[in-house]
Structure formats: C-alpha cells, structure tokens
Image (tube, rainbow, N blue to C red; front, side, top):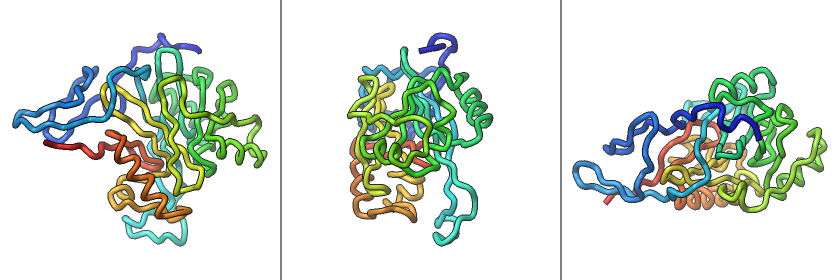
Amino acid sequence: MKNIKRRKFITSAFGVFGLLNLSFTGTNPPYIKTNQSDKSGRTITLKGKQDSRVTHWDIITIGNLSRVRYWGESDERPVRKAICTCTVISGNDFHLLVDPSLADEAAMITELDRRTGLKPDDIDMVFITHQHGDHYFGLKHFPKARWLAGAEVAAGLNISARLPKQVEPSGNILFDTIDVIPTPGHTPDHQSLRFDYRGLSVVIAGDSVATKDFWDDRRGYYNVRDEEESKRSMEKINSIADIIVPGHDNGFFVNTQVV
C-alpha cells in the first residue's frame, strides 16, 4: 500500500451538492444525518451509514455509450466508441479501482493522476463488474494490483485467456467495507459494489444501470440479456442506494424519500 497519506483528500465527486432544497455544501462536508430537514421542515431519509472505512471516492472517467436511443440514435449500429465509467474507492489503507476504462496506457495513467493524484502502482485492487471488454480494457495497466470479479465473471475471464494473469473470485465483501452484490440482467453474472460514505449509500452499478435516462425508464441497454431480470436488479439498487454510479454516465442521486 503506497501513498495513502501523501495527498490531502479533496471533495469527492459529490462533495459539493444540493439535494432538493437541502444545503449540503462545502469542500469537506460533514457527515450527513440519516434524517435531514430543510428550512420548510421536510425530511429526507438516507440509506447510508456514517461508520465506514471508505474515506473518499472519485469518478476517474465518465463513460459514454456507443449509441443512445434517447438521442434519436438506432440500436442497430454504433455511432461512437464506448467507454465505461471508472471509479476509485479509497480508505486509509486501500485504493480500489472499478472497471478500468481506457485501453491506452498513457491516457489511463493521465486520467487517474488528474482525478486522484494516484499512480497505477498505488492501486491495491481492481474489480471488474462483468465480462464486456469495455469494462476491463485498462486492466493490464495495473499489473501490481490484485484483479477481482464475481466468481462467474472471474471464471469466464480466466477461461478466455485474454488477460496476462488470473482474475480472483471476490467473495461478498472487499476490504471489510464494500459489498459485492449480484445485479444480473445486463449479463447473467453481473456484479455491482455498494459502500457507505458520510451517511450516503453509494452503488457502483456497472451496466446494471447504463445511464440516468435508462434508469428513469427502468430500461436495459440494447444488448441486455434479460430485460425483466435487469428491471429487478434496478429495483434492488433503488432500495439500497442514495447515489448510483452507472456504467456509462456520471453519478446521480436516487430515491430520496421526502416527508
């Protein structure tokens, strides 16, 4: 584990935010109460816990899709190259990178440094949500990290012999604080991650949620394997998340219960 203390953690991707009319602002926001009221007396109920080993998280690349029906594009052919959203989750003694997105080594290193100040050798573990290539294009740039995925995803990647070393099965929890949760539908063996951060429950959803537009419609992407299973996974995520980081979009708040 290297360079945990060498940088001063700055605000996370959602460190400065407004939720409805509530004013959670600042460059180093305090822990958010589970039930928080605004000036009119309305209360939102959040799902996260304040006690967590996660001290910081950053979106490294905001992904995009190769074709977007909400922009009037056909599902039949790609319009642009797709990249996935890549995230780093950090604690006092670990850095975990999820879905390394960039095949070009220099670009991956540049974005990691630009967003976190970290180098590839600072990453302790890389987690892959599913077997689609755009979610592990940059995996080879982290040779010193452990490579993990859900058991079926790991087995599939290892059998494919596409990677220079083995991907380990992850189990149900990483670093004793990050939950590995099955979210099938996009692929049968898709896995997402959930963790608590300053009172918020954050889900790194991979392609179980493609973008905010697909989420709003509870629709899978054009290549979804099982649409009904995908919807069930989205409802599962909806029940546990305050923030969702989708597979090909920026993160967003969800399901805020206002009283």
